[in-house]
Length: 179
Image (tube, rainbow, N blue to C red; front, side):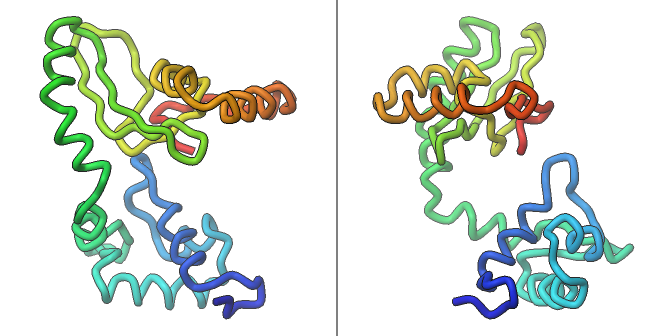
């Protein structure tokens, strides 16, 4: 239910706050969160205080904010991704030990590649993927395999999207594999 001038509901705004965090940006001030989430200062300060109070966010000694342990705890309860990772890990380790290259587990999620696990070998080449990171389907070997075995409808949608975007606006993989 929307309760803001923008028409957004509180859940949408909470997601925007949480999406400001990344593997490269683990600590930030409430003001930085507000700018990145494009939320009014008073709103974001109130939301951050509420999220800290329930443990979804935590404050450090300098009052900077990070994702809270309670969020991690809740995310892992009954997680499909965690169960999939646990089932696949012994097989991934076997493959990785044999080929001595990066071994990744990824799923198709919202027309993107979402990486669930990654095992690296010290002698393997560069790899920009990160666990819980996303890449466009066409931008990784895992994504290409997922795309190759997906429905014809999805293949056509991804190809049409790529063809319709000017080369200068196409999403290129970034180090870390995050949006």
